[in-house]
Image (cartoon, rainbow, N blue to C red; front, side):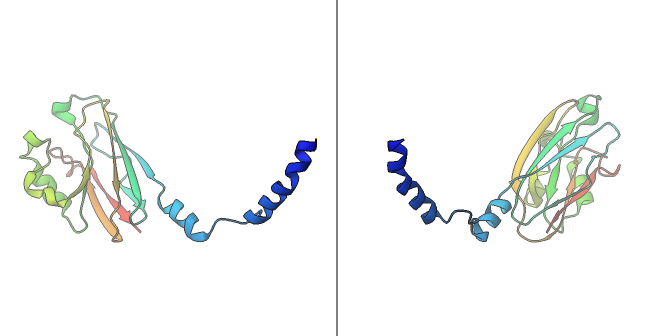
Length: 162
């Protein structure tokens, strides 16, 4: 008890100095919130569809995409990837060029400057995840599956940066 009483002035003084009950400054809270990773689970299937065709994020936010091919067809016939393109890119033109890029998993080297991020090409029951920083410029950024004919079947969407 004597030991506790002798520490009491130190404890009370410490509480007064730390401003008991005060919140953190707003700038610190905002920075913490902005740095949170936005995670999205995207599935791709044998019907050539993504479960998400619109993803919204904050400018400059860390983004994690987990792509899972939930289909059952063999990779040679029904592989999937997730390719995020720069704002203003033509998703169809990218997918058309990808048809001839089998050696590079349907990622055409001539259009590499249009790609912000991409997953690996996945066979049935495979998954891949990527983490990247969202663009700082607000707007719509197209994403596609670049496997042949998948874009035309509707396998594309948009990442909206706010």
